[in-house]
Length: 240
Image 1 (cartoon, rainbow, N blue to C red):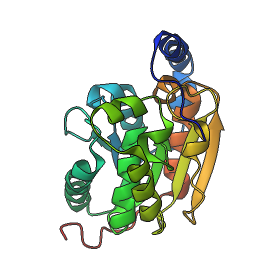
Image 2 (tube, helix red, strand yellow; image 1 turned 180 degrees about the vertical axis):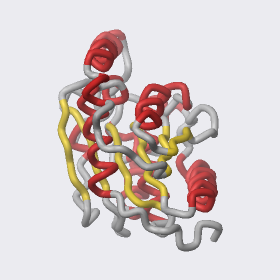
Image 3 (cartoon, rainbow, N blue to C red; image 1 turned 180 degrees about the horizontal axis):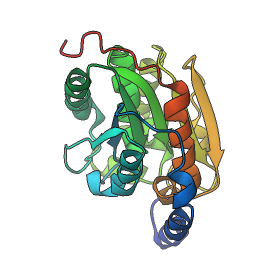
Image 4 (cartoon, rainbow, N blue to C red; image 1 turned 90 degrees about the vertical axis):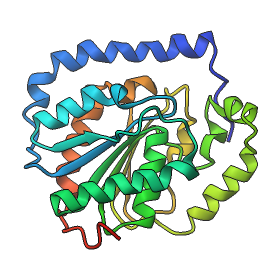
């Protein structure tokens, strides 16, 4: 499996096509607002590498309009250090689960999806389901266009890939919906396929990596899966 080309002008031009999803999103908003209601179920949306809560504002606004109790992660810019971020995200999720008295739905874009997956793997008692958008379930950053940035920071990508494979030996026991695109110029689409978790659904869409967070089709899928796979389980040990 090869990583995409490092981010250059061609990558940026290709990914900029994802901005065309914004007018499509506006045109389809009446239909999207007719999707099933969330009934104040708690949802946390996690941003990708280098991004913060501003990048998920439209998605969170949409889910809020459907009646979900949705929030961002509240941890600023996602700097990419997964080992450091996992316990911080876990604390945020545990607190939200305790506040609402039930397990939380996690939606993660790109690296945000990796964080959502790891929290669900370690704390299935506080996570109801996971939905990922263009998230590399295989290899960490190795099969992404930001691989070189990690190398320049001194990360050994082969070691990270081995660590990810080792974590995957413990399957994620909550439902996972992995949304991916073959037009993604940031993450190799094959790396987004989770072949380990027992309750995973892969959904292919036609958009760019940037477009995954803006696509009306992706929004429809998220809204439908949040309702279809949610169990509303009480959080068992949210403060543990």
